[in-house]
Image (spheres, rainbow over the protein chains, first blue to last red):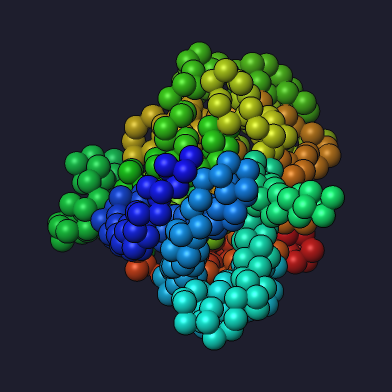
Length: 198
Length: 299
């Protein structure tokens, strides 16, 4: 385990950003060239949204993974979180620019459609987190209050999964699995804390 | 029957196979566009049918999975021969009608219709089929009948999607009798002059062009004439979102999204949306069916 962690410590985090950027452009290219099927707008919107949600799950898993298995991915957590934000920003951009397009309609949707309200709230919570995901912000804010702010990730992830649960038609399992996993990962933090107190 | 929908299309108006098989070629060639323009010249002069590729790869047929491409991937397992449609309830000649026997008695026409999904996307499909009224006449509708109920085949070993309770299987739909007898209402058995692909509802499906697509039930095995409004699958799943009528109506939003606009498939990444038409553009033909009815309450 220590050996693995030593290896991980030596691995750089920056390739994650490159991978994420390449994947974002690759999906866009596929959409342009017919690789996402006959309805590329929704397909791209969903691909970005799902990738963002998946990375949020991975980001949330870093701490429990370290506590329960000892594998330390803490070094990569910022990159994972930021990449998740980039995908979700892409998801929102596709919705705004390629899907709905009209400004009046966009505002009406945000106010009137609960699943969009929930999704937008989740994105709004991610904004301060993305803006403060750098060493300068940690120094300026102080580690304690920075950590407090970044607990918003929990709420943002829950809102993201609820957004997914709310938008599907009929009874579908996949979004419920996302919500359950996210709630489980957040819940695991409380289990750990109670054990410490005991 | 009130009136028959007259199709002025001739056989040579049907798009040549080499043209519809390749959308890019079609979009690229002015000759191709001209041909399609001619084909649509009858009822709907502005309608350009979508490429077969669009129509067969973007389907909601949840029995084969909830993804849009799942039916194209999975529906090959559906056995469509032999096939029969049981027509029962308030009819003079209730029976299981063999598909071949039905086809032998029907005259197949091409109908180029707009198809508008409740999810706010649309396409134009060149169906081949016959009027539902003609099929119902085979069985002889009794005078007390007011509604028509439809049922999709349910075969768990051929339909991977029915393992999940996405809907209460089998899929069921219904129409008021006057809607069912309307000349625009057809049972489709083909697309672009070929047998209808499994993912589009083989071997025969309902097409009601002024209603949201989910009303146009696929792979029909039972048609029941009744005097009570029959249950419909999406209404059972969520009555607040899906009404019995489900006429295309840009003024009545789905609770979760606007129905004022739609995305026409085949336009690519920058296609944007176009305004949705009342009754999907068939108001002239069908608005009278709903005279005096509050379409907001009876959505």
